[in-house]
Image (cartoon, rainbow, N blue to C red; front, side, top):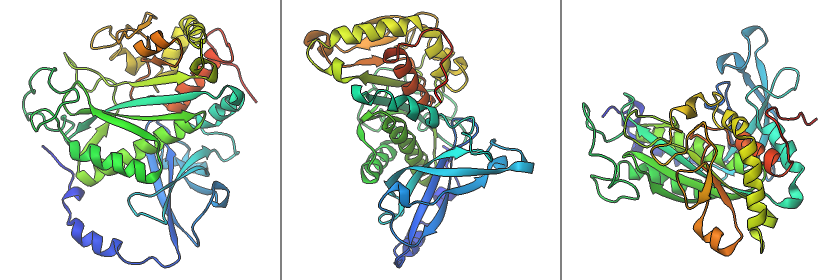
Length: 372
């Protein structure tokens, strides 16, 4: 198994420096989504005091020509702080700062999907939309081979790995535990974790989050996972189908409810929303992965606990359907539903915005409206 060179450096030596007092200064790590729509970038600056709110954080800038976001002749991009978390790597009083990216003309960058998402969410605050996203991912060695798999072969077939325990079943639990605790420290609303069906594949869940918070918390949890994996010398992949063949892919199942759905008789509101989703299946497929459905096509085959990418379906407790209504929801006639179509590498801002547009704003057709 190939580990990164930096992970083999003496961490005890580094800790000597991390234990030094930092005076009254604060380190703020600014984080943003790059031009791929999937990658995250970060850089740090010193603040004179601990910020108590987003408003106290200064705007910043970066070289967009090095992040697939601008030409070298006009490369400055703006970083606009939008969400602040505690820093589990440098610890208090230091901060992680999730930012939006604006171009030189102060318009949102092409991969800044948060900007419109926030506008859409502001239109439905009275309905209190809650989301919970189940982020699946795969651990890889530096050679791109799944972590813990035989160098020139495959582990035993799927079956014993889902929620498994034991060295021959759970590959990489140290990373999972470190990530879980780091998210809790940061203030991310992580609510659980488990080993997945394919060995070296895991899942964590974030939520319930209301409105724009869902995208903020999921992106920040992804950043923390990348950073934890960096320390351990392995790589995290959000590819929807990292291994071809008889192996499960990786999704980001999205649970959704409104105030009406959660109250008595809410099942009728759930069924109405599902009917609307069925009429816009292709629109949702297009926004549920960064490549307009091409990544998800490798995963949504109708096998390995997925629906077909070409067909829309819904059912109670059916993990082979596009939309699953949990059995307890069917019995209690209220609660939430699960959209199983989003890919592991989806942009949560795009996913949550699309659900609101279809289910609550009653949009029809394949092209979303522009909201100024």
